[in-house]
Image 1: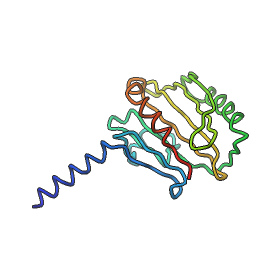
Image 2: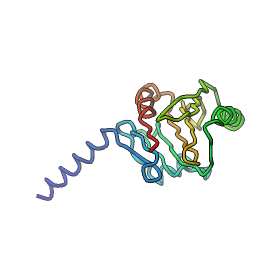
Image 3: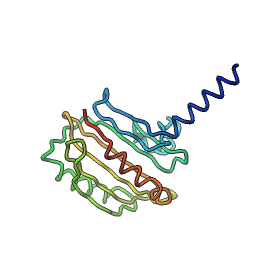
Length: 172
């Protein structure tokens, strides 16, 4: 009986990894559906991927760990009428501090009834180049931040899923 229960548990555990999952922040004030196969990044992996002490509190990764989604709710008010100026400021700052920064696009998008800036760019890591889709908006006197990223090698496999996940973002 134990073996049957264990087999069922493992089957259902694996099945849940294959399906898209919903994740949220601040008692569901912000929620989104992650692509299938993305799970919460372990604290050990988070420390390895972010060794400079700037580890995110909320991060998801895929099985290879070459693609991830980082999301946060920051204690900074960002009024909707300051989105464009903030987008320019982020782009300028990233040009200075992000290794291998190459701008793909910097535009304003509308998601869940809000104006967001979407900054897409390439950046370097120690051993690869990464494609980032960085999104920011202000909501209820906070700043909502997402970064969907994957190595160039994996980005083509996840781009469609990332963009669907972005469209699933809800501000409640």
